[in-house]
Length: 126
Image (cartoon, rainbow, N blue to C red; front, side, top):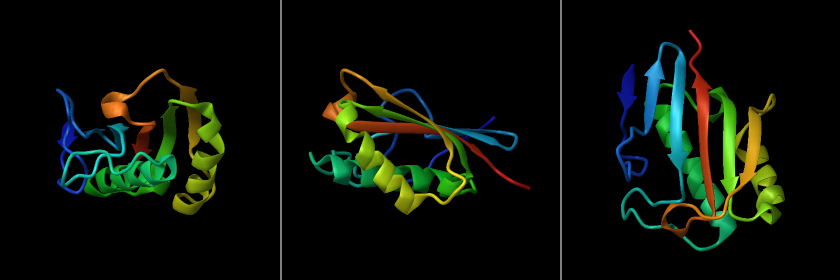
């Protein structure tokens, strides 16, 4: 296993790696809408938080040798399922078909008061 670390995404806020590479599979840790420079939430606006989360995930994907379109499975955690359509809209701008397998889960709270968190599993082609 090889840990992935990049300064273009927020540093881990606990005892975990931004991602772990195991062969051609990359396990992407959860990303919330932290600005990597300030380590503060980028905004209280859900649309801006979704964009920042996807930007953070993309940075980790890139550091591991892939991109968002290499994600095979995406998990999305929302504090309110009414944001579901906003996630769908953002995904159409950041991913191309075929889209990753996905689960969207409503949770009672997320770290630092975030409204959205995403993690995933990425495949690195030969």
